[in-house]
Length: 347
Image (tube, rainbow, N blue to C red; front, side, top):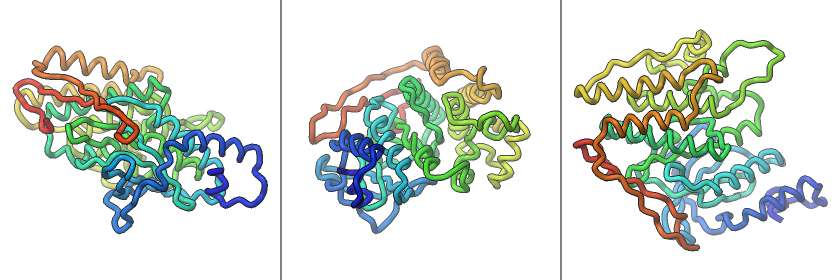
């Protein structure tokens, strides 16, 4: 049984442990523990919850990303149960703007998620190379992916450009959804890594002073929409939200006061400035302080798609589907687009 393999159990399994074994065994087809060779000599990317290593998959015959979670199992069944749940959820997702899961690995008491290696890296690292129009197309893709997650009752909970990867053809791919929930299953409350890493993207209600009898706020569709606005702000400015405030603790106090980011100074051509102002208007809608009045990701997506149809002369917009077999990567739509008189950077 996988659960006994993880913990090296010698005593009889409890009912909950047997249940966990059944869950993991149902995911055995995603177990790449003996398939992927990991290069442990360097860590090309680090996040708040994981270290990302380059690996080579024999099954897929290509380079893969191995995200080793900074969670020591250590007998914590909640962590393993949540890990199995996140694997199951992610493996069932199929959308052009969501990074496909290839599988998972268990190395001793550490767990890893395996996905295709993205040579272009995160959207944050690509932003300086993109035009305003490209950035707008990226924002539509992010909203599209988020609306899809919500349609599947999946909450991202840590949306920002660092957690959006860019494929070789320029498609934005949401990733790292659920990873922060894995971290919270091993700790209580906000830890220093969470506060330091994602404070600037967290919604107002996380910092609002409320009645002690009320339950603490949790990540949901409305908090994701707030973060979507902060992510679009990154695309407008090329910087993190509240960039003029260097200390995250001061950012927290600023949010508690109900202060939103200031409207940026726009540069570029008249058409670029007009588009940035429209993107700013989307940010403001996402930052509606009353969650009940905050629009859904699908509503935001609809607004942006209508703007694109009304203002962009689309020369080409098509999808291709890669064939899928037991030895190939899962089928994934590929988006190619040309906007106005501008050829998208990644085509």
